Image (tube, rainbow, N blue to C red; front, top):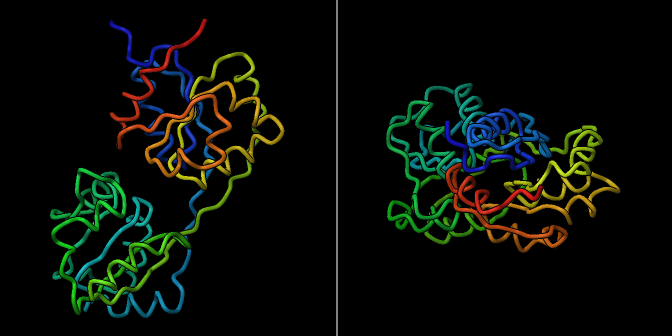
Length: 257
């Protein structure tokens, strides 16, 4: 059996479970040693009164946008409590993982450009160019950028948020991971957001600088790569979106005996 592209590479996976487990399995298939250390936890929340009002008008919705796969899971759950999904509502996703979560939930036609996997990419889609007078619901976690809403309102849409989950920093003992790092078993860390990056380094505590200086940070967006905390790492790589893009970037690293 031939060696995988990541043979012997130690990679810290910081995504929330169960996404961390799925990514770790893919990395292990390529020969990597995966250290699962979630630096973000997703907690379901009840929509605000304004979000609940938006759900009450779900039948009038012309377009529903889901910001993440978590927004699909928790957003559809709260939407179902307000009745059947409106047949006339189109669905759009930020990122391919979000789009796939919608397909897995039974939506066949999902607006999700493959060229870019962020809000800017979605906004460039032809289907979102003319939204004058249309009701749009954005399913997302608490907080976040306002760029998408501002752009949609600039195109004439009426935009409501349904915030259906929150992100929090987990409580976890980093000592076993730090010990593996000191043994030279960790070469890379992968994160999906600046919040995850900040949480991860905070969870490492006083060992953060020494650990980061001995590893490569692999991210999917230039905005994360430019974050001040990213500079604490020996090297930063911006990988193409998706697992294949991540594996490709990681495969450029070499394990030093």
